[in-house]
Length: 313
Length: 313
Image (cartoon, rainbow over all chains, first blue to last red; front, side, top):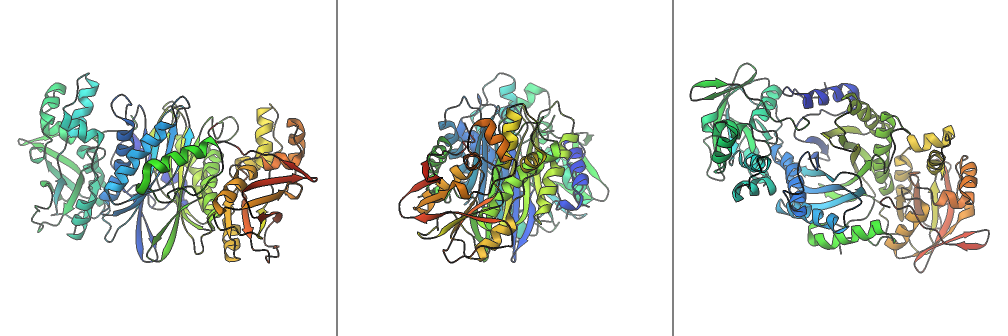
């Protein structure tokens, strides 16, 4: 067995096919981070690629924001494991027509995001290539790593922060509108939740991941990895204030819009039923863990079907 | 100071500009690997991007060979530090028109190269994008790391293996000829010299790096980082047997052809003058360390000017 159970979708079929082909050459794949024990310390490692035209558009973001966002997305994988950051490595591919200053501007954003979590830029690589891309690899340590697979029947599900802000900006851009400043900030400068992740790990989190594919995609991964069923109350989701306008524009309820919104980089965590919540940071109870499999979403008493966001589609 | 002294060239000007911009947000940049102390163990980390049309052509190599070569190139940075491999992370970007099987074939090569050094595939990421690229991040540990900066006046310079084989294949392809099988193997399946690197570290190596830019480029880095001058005897370079034909085709002497050939992934190492050589693996004495700066190349008693290979040109 070299891949943890993942939710449905072609992106995850590809990961399963790769794990089969690698066989014993691979560690267990599919969690937020790889974990490696080195002399009594547990290292957490993850790599994350951002490609122009797939993950971002240059007319939406400054080079510094592109560097920050790619790095924050990778650091968020450390947060989802309850790890702290040592540093990042950045491999940049830039079209040959660009001025060399673009490298430095992108790396300024990479460095600022790393520094915001106490990490450093440890190294990197530069190449020319037809499309702009950034591959950020993050290295951290976890005193008590929290993978996706430990949720227990009876646990409650919580999410940090607010959901739907990044998607609100994305839908505005796609619709030719100017995003609200708060939504744009959520998309351009997401804040990886490393301190919340470590705090939740210390409080006994049983399963955790970061919301990169959106709650509707990532909850399915947590359910599959933990071999449990989840019930999520869409009405309990903490909504970013700019969701309302954009949900109306695309014809979804605000809760569904937020649940289907990717790249908020908040955390979804299962906590024992005895966990009372906290005032340390915004944390909302959004559901609980049941026997069975898959995720059932309820809104106003009705059950909904929701799919996540496929980064590869 | 956040970048070690590097040789001349636009690629290295870019690294210097980035280091200036990052300031305190960066660790010391520019060596083969970043070194991070974690609970008494020294981690060595490096990231390396390979882009289709820049670093390889798909009509030259199979997908498995592309995966192997990109991974071997990254693992070679661990060898250059005297480190051993824990594992690799692989971020793949593949054009959307490709079949999903391409991901698995590339990753098969990645996994085989990692396994050949005792490492595993720890994790990865997949994305679509206009150009095929692989970013491989390697993680290892070093009991006695050997950076580029310790060469002492009086040391002797050595290289492992044979040089010029990868360039012989490249020049054949560029000239529309079929590479000799041995040269093609050197290009398609380079062998990172991790065991030699660790052995040389234990024997007291004072400075070391892997030959990715070619001896003519990398010797300049070793000289700059160590703040010494090097004298290299081109006639003493160990030549790959297929160099002769291709050197003749491009009108260079075999020794110069080999010195200017990139991506052999052998090691260049400075050893104390008392080091007697070894029969453990092929190792040739090619020069020595003097006061001053830069690299002087001699062939048949004449001094030559040589430049390395610019990956960004």
